[in-house]
Length: 263
Image (tube, rainbow, N blue to C red; front, side, top):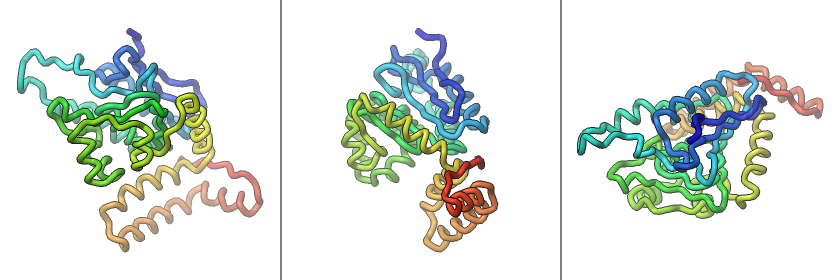
């Protein structure tokens, strides 16, 4: 077994973070969490990073919680899964959803349980055609976590969210794209080329505006129309006082490529 549970790609505007427990389909352990959160925090703090790619080593993206990492020897009631969520999955999901740059999930194989919902926390999910998504929680008497209860109905509607969560059926990547759960499904051989092209494109765009777009769309969901426009006004006011707006306008007028800096 590798001593490194998370691999971090070379320096550059695109930071690639790879879950690296291929023998167990990259399932989560406390040790993996202890490496993954600092890797994400470091990418968030590094001003040179303008996009993040999250993927898995081997034939899976992430199979969710490694049940072998949980001590069940005490029998029923010995484990409080809520504590595990508060300790690991709430910080992880929140970190991904609040990154200052776009995050792409490159789903190279099965994404199950918390692994599926970690992918859905990302701004873009691009999956290999052989990949699949499984809300496996009902199979062990639990509910979706890692943000799944919030994400699923917003992505695919209540009926499909209930169906996916209650049955725990495997959802092929092609069907996941068709119902709007993920951004794109591509041939396996084209996965990383497609992801890398998108990451490079996003890295050249105004990072702060992209992160604020994510936040504004999420915050507008429970608002009425007028309040949503008020939110737009507040965010636009902030962005228009930044470097990137001035640079974007100047580049447009000069018919040149803009160089964005805000983050």
